[in-house]
Image 1 (tube, rainbow, N blue to C red):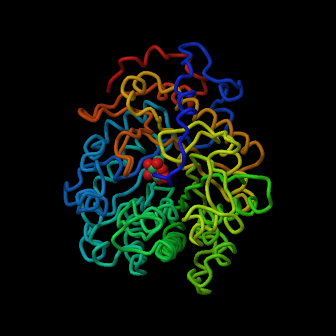
Image 2 (image 1 turned 60 degrees about the vertical axis):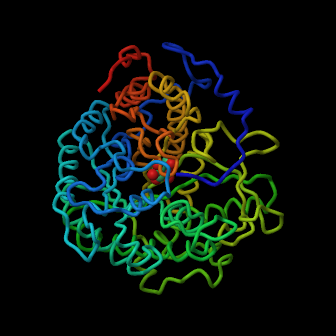
Length: 523
Ligand code: BGC
């Protein structure tokens, strides 16, 4: 998702973009370790998969009884340059897509359920049978191919009616709406779905929608953004409280009523950037800890310990709602696993004692500021997502940090992926050789393998993304897919990374085996 603006060093980018591509047979890595990473470096039973979300791939935005979602309404009223009306048309092409997943050899597929397809009017209306049928078909066909469905209940999109009726997550009524929706999912799909993620990245979602105002319902205030309504210092806190309680209550429902019979598990995913202190000062070390608390910790502390991190209490003061004793006990241990969406690492600078940007001086930011350069050197190679850099060590660091802080609760890497900054050359370069993506995944996997060797209980890894898809306000030019999607024909073409992932999953190394076969293989 779109991150806050950072300085992009064109010089640095040019150096990397012009790095020679070492073709067929040659190593694309400098360090042998990463080039050699293979399936058998991970425990047996470790799930490898790919991930998507409903609005980003499905399209069919008003088909078969689906109502307008918040994203449909937002984009149709001019909030985005491109929209998900058609997206990858996965709604009509899912069978072919599942074939492609099977070809790839993945063991699990993470996808989300469109709330507006199942409950077009929320609790006020009927369940839409066509929506149920669609996800039943996906689940059944995945299982038929031996692919484990990994389901996110809420990944950013919701029925617009809930936005109109309640201002969505600003209103505690949304908790009831979510529980109602989640219960239908557990009841209907839970006989076959054993992994449930209640909500995707609650904190980043609250930030983008209610602090920066770049996601619907576009609420914010200066200096965070220029929205018609909102209060960036307060509303994200309220939205988070409702999101967290919605998650906790849905999870409790599952644990009490469904888990005993269905035997599955629930988790929540967090957008887990790794934060490193900008300097060696104690203040910057504290700032890096605070940054963790204000991002991943905001969701994970309540979900595991039953309460907000101390740093939030200290810096947000009376703006931070408290959990009642009942709520604390329902939140505590409300997850069976932690979903980690990890892409990048940032340096962090303290703002309690130093001058920072206008936003870094706000409590809602934890009085920290992100930086991507130290002594004039960028933290890593730039990607196609503003603020996101290639820093493989961050994977090991974030997993170790989460392992220690949360007593080695089982973890899944629910998202990790690469988009190229090279948007203009994409068709030619990405179609045949997305070498940078392969390098990214290999290095991050090697880093992950190290943390597992050191005892981290990580149980799966999902490459983001299965297909090039609708990348929110960035539209279709930011491509994370292993499969290239032609925007005119929607044809899926395997990138080189498909060959690499397929080989990796078959415990072969690198691209040596059939790099040649990939050319011209259009599906
Ligand atoms: C989100 C995805 C998004 C990805 C890449 C994640 O934070 O969950 O929906 O496409 O980042 O930006």
